Image (cartoon, rainbow, N blue to C red):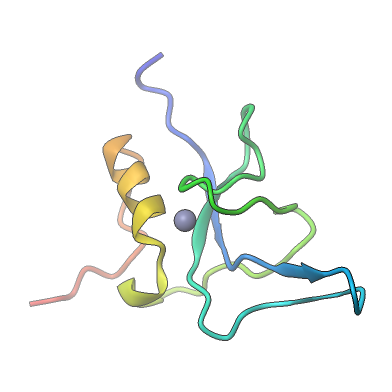
Length: 92
Ligand SMILES: [Zn+2]
């Protein structure tokens, strides 16, 4: 099915520390597109991260700048025609 679009959730990757037993987010981390369904569920499109997207609530707020979004994830979305203007495309 080529018209199947991956459903994703943009979130910050959360690093889990096994030493202190708590989660933290790198202050300069980018948002990644985590898949919400299919075999790759909970994995980012770029393949760099995996986390429980239902557990963490680090969703991307509206108006987040391009610089804070993983380019690889975005590319994967664009390639699959699932990119539907999440960003305010107001560059001009
Ligand atoms: Zn990514």
